[in-house]
Image (cartoon, rainbow, N blue to C red; front, side, top):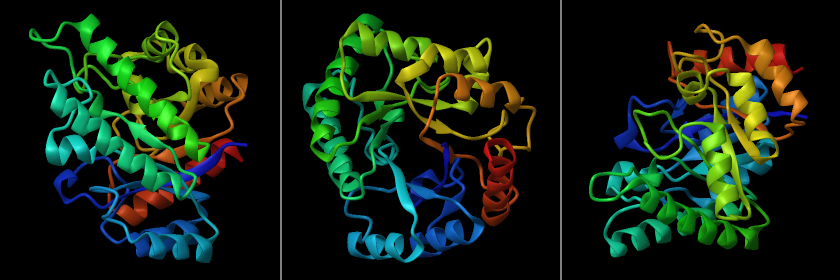
Length: 271
């Protein structure tokens, strides 16, 4: 069964980004429970930005799970990239992701690699950038095994990376370098830009897909754009997807309304 989740951002530098709930972790978790979500996805500045004891108590109080933890603050705040041309900076990026894997691991939550994948440039040809990215994913996927969770890798649209843009690109990266314990994140917003057909993209990802960002074509909450969800739901059933559909969307028109709109669409489509 597909479960629901909603994003909570604690990163001031990401203000205006596509996260539904903001700032107050306790209020966000309790609202998610009130609205009927199964889990929350946390975007934090770093592993020490969350009081782990408080978070554990909140999850116990509400019965919610932690679906995943983001690592993008490493790029947003410190400009860290797994494909930086400087080895020391690549190591700093790997160390940051490991710290987030440690944080998420306490709650059986995988870490997500999105913006920290970086880009290829004139100083770093694409084949070399993909090699560096693959090496980092391989190391980090192995590191995550100690918590019995995978690492989640997210292909992004062309405006955010020029490495892997489609599910097929992600599969090629994982399989060509024999990377283990790494799954793909299928973000419907990015797929709407890059895939010829979102449903086919999901089928291309197949067994490699381990997380879904549930959002509309314009990055507003599901139901506020022109996304056609019926073929998407059918494709997810066809590939036997059984993990989270997590709301990573703009808080439009406001966080509470966005969270409410999303769970209503989730219930309509998946229940």
